[in-house]
Image 1 (spheres, helix red, strand yellow):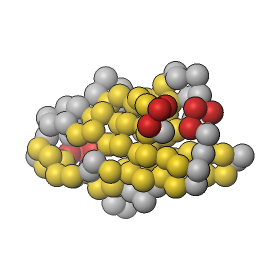
Image 2 (cartoon, one colour):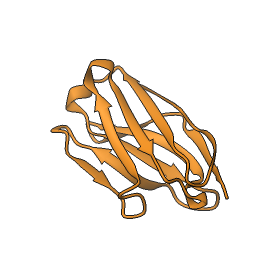
Image 3 (cartoon, helix red, strand yellow):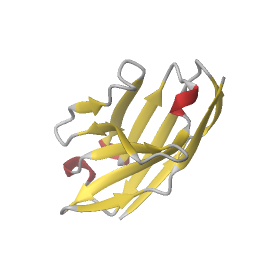
Length: 114
């Protein structure tokens, strides 16, 4: 299983970024995919999840600003982040849970300047 995340960077507050996570070695259409983030000195937290049937979950802190989606043909999950705030600064990780085991991408850094 490999999860390759990309798309992070430096953006001003109010700006947008789109993260991508390309998956291999899994049956993507049958795997719930998630984005987590970890800010300095804080625990890793769930940001968004897209379930097997395509329904989604967004944490309260990003609801209305972020969108999670997927392209099954490309085995890729996306996190569209709009109206970014300095408190969104973190390393973002994509995640897949397969047979009760967590798999993580390498993380991509998002820095939002005020």
